[in-house]
Length: 122
Image (cartoon, rainbow, N blue to C red):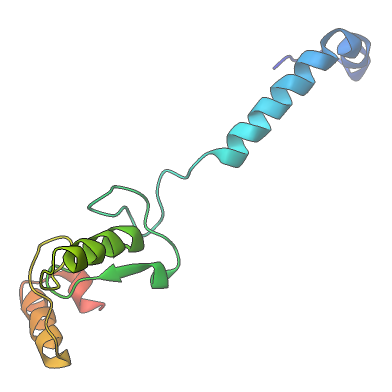
């Protein structure tokens, strides 16, 4: 935080600020270490607004709305559906999830026809 005119001046002043510098360095290190990232390159979960995990196995993408949901929101939705004995629906748009691959393909094609760029990559 301080600029010196020479190394000699810096070394001469070191005993006066050594303790404060160590404390400041520890605080900065802790701040960097424990700071949560603003977001990932995948964006945020549209339900809880937390950054989506980098591991694709910890998130799911709906063929109905092409939204990628974090695993936590998907789990909470499945738990709620089991407890309330409801049919399985998309956590984001609440569209019923098809039981067959043909049904998923049909939903995906509907999104492709709507020029949804995410659906094109699914």
